[in-house]
Length: 161
Image (cartoon, rainbow, N blue to C red; front, top):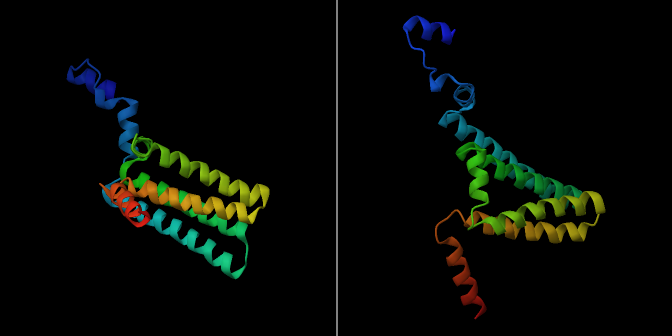
């Protein structure tokens, strides 16, 4: 139909905006309101899964269930930010030089926590990985706040010294 319209109007040059990629991008672009709703829903689901894991630990005593729900909650919470900045931009920011180490540690701890809880069924090891995961997630999150890491470093060094 576009070819016919261009031929009738005398425009023989294909329009850049009528290609498949611009059409695909336009059809997958979310409005800002939808992005905020998606972020909030995913973030809340992530927190609820983490809390559910904590309740299961205390009520049921299942360390494996705690580790699985806690880790899935963290993964969904991180994924929620894809709604705000888009998945490609999120991955670029995650692997920026300032936070690449924290990102790798977080991802490795996700895998090790799930492996220790499900594969090895070692509750103590899963708990160690959950603690490291929490510390890595905190350090990763602080990288998005300007000068927050420096403030934490100075505070910790003042407390130790």
